[in-house]
Each structure stands twice: as structure tokens, then as C-alpha cells.
Length: 239
Image (cartoon, rainbow, N blue to C red; front, side, top):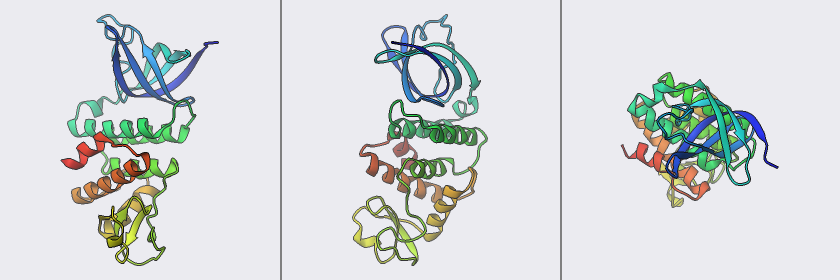
């Protein structure tokens, strides 16, 4: 039987449904990724107002249905307006919620992912550096796709690491990089920075070139394992 439950959630995306409704994809604290209908949200006098915009963290009351749940009430906990009001932060935030939506199974409780997403959005709102590659490497690690960054993923050698290979499983050494057909050339300092991002809080500094190189490598790594493109990351790395 359907039932009512309460949960805290971050809005990942919304799509139109009919003339007045939307389907809202949520990353919840206690129920994992959930898709639910917000009825009448597109009407001028909707009771939801702007409470279910992407990135918003909200306290929800949800009616569990057979196929789609229904949101019956929503109260904002964190709006993350700082992300929506800045174009670069908006693009980065879109990449964070997009990869979470693609990597997370439906209705499987995944509190570490929820907590990481809150941390990533907070870091973006505060304007910290290297949020996207830091978020990606942490997310891949906690979801079972941990990249090898301290020794060669192909041969296990602790020699100088000079490339990154999605199929090999991470960073590879100078001797192996030309043998991996999907290898991405990277400097040893960029690989070392990626390793620090994995182990540190959000906000590790790095230059624009290093940020782009890490994001490209991690995008390719995520797409290799998920077997699908992540368009929001392509948009970031193409700029």
C-alpha cells in the first residue's frame, strides 16, 4: 500500500509533466535517488513556489506511489542561490548533480553520496577552487570505481606517473602510457594533485590547466565505467 514518508533531499533535476506538473529527481538522505511528481508546480499560485529548483536542499513530505511518488509539501533548508546566480558555478553545479543522477541507483540508501553532494554544493557556493575534479574523484571512489593514483594501474610500478587510463584503472607510468589506447597524458604533478583532492577537504588550490586536465581525465574515467556520456562535464572541459 502507498504510504507517506518524510525525508531531506537535494533536487537533481526537473522535467515537465503535462500542463502544470513536474517530475522531480531527488537525492534523498534516507531513501536514495527518488523520482516524484510535484503537482501544479508550474502554476502561478503553486504552493511549491521556488522550493523545488535544482540544487535546492529541502525537507519533504512524500506520498509513495506504485511508479512515481508524489511530493505533498516542501520546505527549503538551503537554497544555494549563490550557485544559480553565477554562470560558472551554475555549470559546475549542473555537473555535480548530473553525475550523481547517473551514478546512483534508484531507491538505494546512499548517505555517503548525499553527504558528499552537500559538501560539493557548499564548496561551490563558497567559491572554493577545484570543486568539480575533487567531487568527481571522491564520488568515483565511494561508489566502487576508486582510481589508482599512487602507483601505475597497469604494471604496479612506483615509477614516475605520466598519464591516466580509464581502462587500466587510473594513473599509469611513462613506460605504460603509450600501450593504453585510451591514455590521457598528464603531468606527475597533476596526478599528485588529484590524489590530494581525493584525500582532502574541498578547496585544494590548482591552476586552470591542472583543473581542466583532471576534469577531462575523470570525465573519461566515469564515462568508461558508466558506459554513457556526461554532457555537463563535456561542456566544462570543452571551454
